[in-house]
Structure formats: structure tokens, C-alpha cells
Length: 470
Image 1: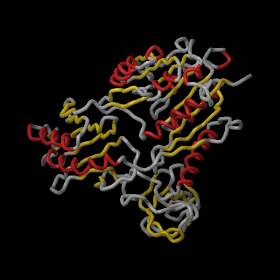
Image 2: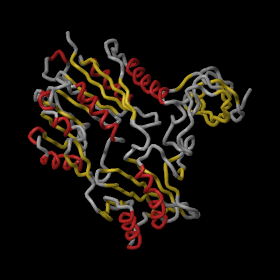
Image 3: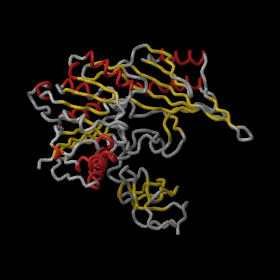
Image 4: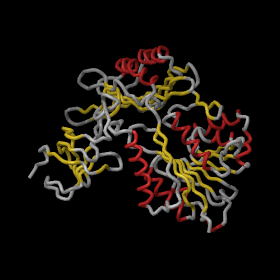
């Protein structure tokens, strides 16, 4: 019998929903009937693996030797692949990734009992390398000497990869890393760390650095919290970084303190429907410009009186009343209003609401947009508040929109609401919410899979639901 530490040779049977290789046959490691999961292995491949840890439902193995590769395998695009936790699927061909992600969505919906018999074939769109415009990098200054490390966590570990390349990221973000690394090495004290949120905006890079304090423990176990306050020299170093790299804005947010504006050479802005929107520090954006465009296209295409050849945007909408929930900065709010819909948008984040309100007032279609701040989890819109709504657009965070969906009246009540569009960034919560919508009498009519997190297991989608015809 093998021990947990003896290498073994196996054939990969299948993939998990997140793209890890699986051996379903009984595996003799003292844990019978447990599946073996092997990251970076593909179905049909004969591999030698090293079992490394027990995990819920099975054992994880580390790939040691690839004996017979799958035709769906391709060379990785990055030297850090297999160590860095940012990407999981670089070894898979684009077609294999497409099959994996679309199958995952359909499987989750089928398991929830969704009726997909009349559903047209899923559309699938993918972002390209070099598009990612938003990222959070972690920096760590070693406690006992050594160079500062800046990058992403290793897979399943709290150990940083010192990033020297990333084919996913926008080139301007990657160009910032070397000077950012040099600057942070002057600021962070031994044992301290920071998170660096970098966003590509229409007016340049926006950088927010969040310093993280550490607890130094003495011989008797008593700890002293150190927050890493910065002085004049550190502020000058940050200002020099902002000037030298022509950053739109740089903000330092020390642990336990308030955000401090170090430099603002231009107000960071985004542009939606030809309208400039001020970008708040740490604001949310779709991960890639092409992902945003694909989501918007799928949204407009499936709405009632949607786009058709030869029609103008304003003529298309018929002036229908549309409520958008979780509107963010208005990346879809403003294009919907531009298309002629009367949009009432709700968002919980105060800074995003203020930015969208200011932008909407400057738009030529300002009369078509209303914006309100609301905690849609604690205080979802009631059925009475939705009484005059023709179309509901949901774009919730990963946790989904179940609190709001539970307020939607069933179709048999003959409410005015007959169409719901759902933009999801989590397939599991979407499947749960779609099940509830089906129970209310809404049928899924269109489903679009959007792969804007290239080479990750993450999947996003746009779905259209219409009231079932009795």
C-alpha cells in the first residue's frame, strides 16, 4: 500500500468544475473511496504525482511527471504559472477552457432544476491577454532582511510570488511594478506589508496603497501593534513615484489611519456612453474593457425591443421603465439611458452614487436617469416599488441577489414587470437565484457566458428571463 508520501502513477479521468484533474477510482492511500485531485492535469493524461495533502472529499496531488500529454494541453504563457495562484488554466487550449466553463454553467443550472429545453445555444466571449485593467498586488518586506517581494500569492498559500511578468495584465500596470517595488522598499519597515490596488482609467493609472500593520511579540508573548506611519521622506518618495510614472492619482492608506492623497495630476475618470465619470479611490470596474463591452452587448441584445439592424437606439427602447440594481459607477446605467430606456438606478456605495449622479447630470440624456443610494441587501425594493417597472436589471456581487428576488411578485399576479436581466459574476449564486426566478414563473430565454478573467476558473454570465406564457 502506498503512503501519503509515495509518488504514484495514475491516469486522469475528468476535470473538476474549476479545471483540476480528477482520478475517481479508489486510491489506496489509507483513504478508500476518496478522489484524487491533481491541479494542472488534463483528462486522459498519464501522470506521476506526489500526494501532498488531505482535503475535504479527497486528496490533492502535485504533478511531478507528465508521461502522456493530452491534445488539449498547450504551453503556459507565463514563467510563474504553476506557482502563482493568479491563473489556473494556462495549460489548457482556448477551446478546452470554453467547454469547461460553459459546461459548468449548464451543469449548475440543471442541478437546480432549470428548464433549459428551449434555451438557444450559449454564446461565449473571452477577453484577450494584456487587457486586465484592475489588480491588487501584495507587497512584503521580510522581517529578517532581504529584498521586498511584490506580486500575487502562491496557489493555496500565503506566500508571495515576486512577479516579473504577467501576460494577463495591461502593459501599463506591469510597467509600474519595478518602480513601485523600489519605492515600497524605502517605505515599508521589516515585517510590514501593503496591498496595492492599481486601476487603468481613461486619464491614467490610479494607485491606492494600503499599509498593513503587524504585531511584534516579545519573549512573554505580549504584542505591540506597529502601523507603519509614514513621514516626510516617505511622502516625498511616493510623490516622486507618482510624478515619475505620470500617475493620475496616488493615495496612501496607512493601517489604522485615513486615506491620504499624495498626488493627483489628473482626476481619474472612466467613460461610459461618451460620458465622463469620476473614478472614486478603490472603485469597482469590470475587469477588462472587452468584458464590459461583451456584457453590455448581451444585455442590450436580449432586452425587450432590443437592438435590430436599421433601428436607432432611442427608437428601440419604446421608453420602457427600467430599474437597475447594483449599478456601480454606471457602466451599464448610462448606455441603457443612451439607448432610450428610462433608468432608475440603485447602488449601495455612496462614492459610486455621487459619481454617477454627477455624470448623469452632464449627459444629454440626463432626464432619462435617476440615481439613488440604497443597501439592497438590508433594504431590497418591495413589490410595490417595482409596480411601474417594465424591466429589472440585476448586477449583484458574488453573493447574488436572493434578498431582492424574494421581493419580486410571481408572474401570475399580473405585475407590469415581465422581463429580468441578470448579470452575474458567480455561477453558483446565479444558479440559486435562477431557480427562484423559475419558481416565480420566469423562464430563462438567453444565456451568454463571458470569460473576462482569462486563464482563471472564474466565469461571468448574462441571462435574460421572461414571464412564462401560461
